[in-house]
Length: 516
View 1 (cartoon, one colour):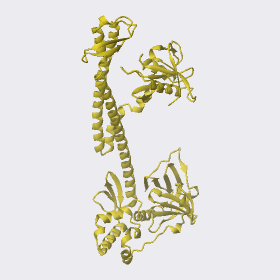
View 2 (view 1 turned 120 degrees about the vertical axis):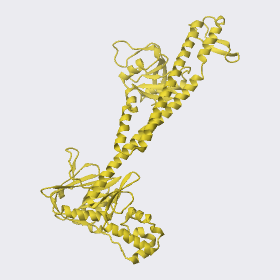
View 3 (view 1 turned 180 degrees about the horizontal axis):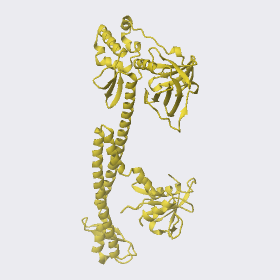
View 4 (view 1 turned 90 degrees about the vertical axis):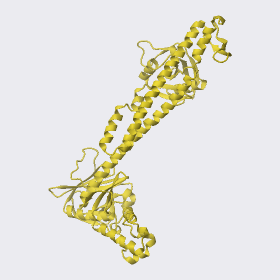
């Protein structure tokens, strides 16, 4: 009810007692939708702060206000050094005016989200504070007063549309009446209850209520009352501070909850993908089987073979084809497969450790989420916020990496961010089995297509990586771009070469369209 007609009527009366005779010495804004007015009587200053944000509109009267040296704009210039001659409350209207010398008037129009401050010279509007509400320039001072027929006869006549008949009540008053079962009463008792409510509004206390985690201003008593005031200015100041502090608390709480929720969602995705990869690796022991089968059939394998067919004693002696490297002996081929099986076992162990760490992290995140949900004060939020900030935010982790990551059909594609990052990516983040790609004969990003044990690179995946290499190069705007493709083991850097420059010993060239 802080913008309700009945409160503004009491507020404007108190302002008349305090500021008539004062001079308006400055009127400025240094925050969007916030206007500050300073009045002075030669000895003391009186400040009016109109906070008219779309989500919350309220007047307050700070005892002091330090104006910033920068980003501060003076407004309503012709009113400066005009003396306050009176305060006018418009009848049945959520607006009041500060009357100034030279027939100037500054109207405080407290119409919720359309609240505004309007300067009138005589009867006509000259300037508005919130310039997006152009219709306020068409206002006329004497049209702001409105009338209500408070007779019992009019009350009986408008039983079906009392909300329109008594438009000054607003939602808070009607909520108060409905809490007292207004709709269930007969007309005579409705009238009696309505008169009791009017009495409270005419000679109110000023109540600060707390409802559903936020502060509410009221002229009507309630079981949710936190504080009671007798002075309207003290009351609205306390409400403004409490409401802004509460809003800041809720905003920070929601921000932290969203952060934790995002981390939990990321963790769930990580666990799902990592567990899926772990199951695939645990169910695939073909490298060890191939090595065992080779060793069991050494007498059947001659030198220089590229393929052998043997009976698989792991699968009811069904025949199986094993691809060999012809330049290696059977024993060396078996060693290669045993090494890959060992690497696979190491990867399985690493994945299990990663899953355990992530599960522990998510347990901690769940505890923080529970603590945030019940947090009731700023100090509780700060304790949790400090803990969360100790962890490196995801964005910082991504910024510290030398590459942008893309994924296509389960394969990771890493694209260097710049020349220095290209060197780091190629020399420190790659393995010899990775595919290395780069647009031919122009500057561009190094691209790595990451190797996965037991999975050959599909043609369309290579083409996708080549499209990225083309896009992140000087040929990005060409219709077709040649891209060099080679295993990373054929890429090396010579001492003294500039950042990003490498030597490619063997390559194939693909012609692709640049694609982000």
